Image (cartoon, rainbow, N blue to C red; front, side):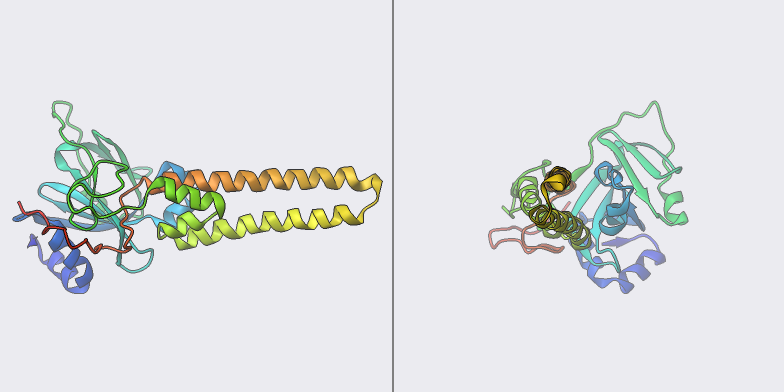
Length: 272
């Protein structure tokens, strides 16, 4: 990894685990000139007033002379988890600092919360209407760091298997929050599970009440049971849909944390 400043060198000494990952992911001769952190904001998380963003979407933003690398990190500390994205600098059309740090690219808008002031200034890109954009943000294999298509089930190069949106969605449809925990968002998964358990407890309580009440109250209790059953079914369905959507954020290896362990057939990380 070519270091462009003493600040980056200090970061490397303080966070050796991240430095190992960067050394493997960067191309030969690629120079790092920016390292900052932020919480990536996704629309599916904004539905819940940004809560899952702050619980699960912390990213390390690494700027080089060629691209931005977005690395999913642990909620506390800087432990690489989950997935990587690359954003070619040629695809960046501009940025806006308020209300969120928004980076406009030819493949969509990247939005971040909580980026330090120095990082926000470094990620300030002036819009250039005459610029011809090329490339677009794309996920990288967490084992060999080869760029991949969105939604693939395994790496086209090293055949590392990825966690799929369908598998995550089915898990959360059966047990709300299971898919989120499988995607390494354990706190989000636990909160979802507790909320659904609360709904199920109300269903059971009103069923017991229905058995103990007289004919005059049976209709009222029956409506309450029906209402909570519908809310519970909606919670299962919504949890499945949200988990499937969150699984599309990046390619997560079934082996777990970053850097993923590639199979024996994997080749060395790309160079140059």
